[in-house]
Length: 221
Image (tube, rainbow, N blue to C red; front, top):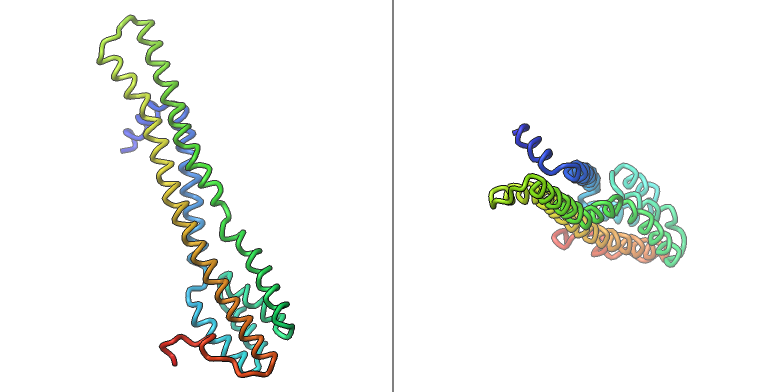
């Protein structure tokens, strides 16, 4: 298998080295992003339920401790709002919005690189193919042998880089779209959670009972 891989690399020439480097970068970013999302808090409703119970009991410090004890971005964002829990609703909402915007950059980290590789990989492969075809016809002209078999062999070797470029681009596009969809979903989830927290703190500050629907799942009613 390794011999076959090295043979393909030799056929493709220097462009295959570039494509291999691009593929390694894509794989490294994909692994890092998968690990990042695996570290995020998965039970948003459960977290809000715990916070709601603490806020209802007038225990903001306890709510902050809950956020501090949970991993991921969402607990950090909600903790940011809780530490300003005595302020008015507008100030709390503004604080949560700032926290959300700051963490959005972390969600999208390195995705631009994958998107760029998805765009340029086919062109790198095509450039290698064009150079390979030029080289093949130059050799045909020098040797004076233009039989179909010779031409086909040269073109076949040249097309290796096009295939390599398409493979790298397809993989990059798949994961780019996957992560974009994941980011959109997670960002919307964080926005909803932040708004629910702001609503709970508003009721707490006005002395009104917090509606249980803000933090209790429907099944718990």
